[in-house]
Image (tube, rainbow, N blue to C red; front, side):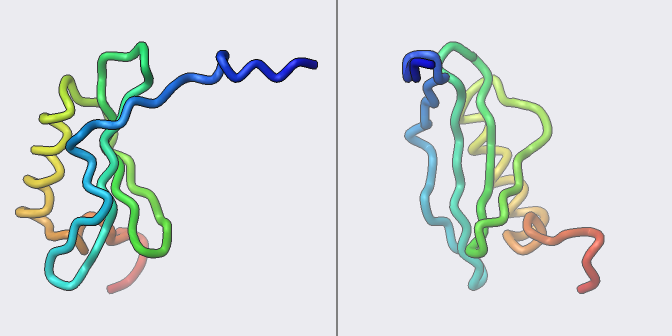
Length: 89
């Protein structure tokens, strides 16, 4: 079997991706990306333990995804994004 690297989808990373975002002593990585031939953007936040939180749904623009991240930080805090509702505080 021939491994055809051209068949793998290419990921486009937004320039708004922030590899390190810190607030209130919590640091996360913010990833905004899409597949090369898709128009919608995905928002993902990764904590220091490599846990990934991906937003439900996609965004029309990378700016919309970035704005949603900032709105969420303002309303819930970075730790609110990372909090597992099934885990006791």
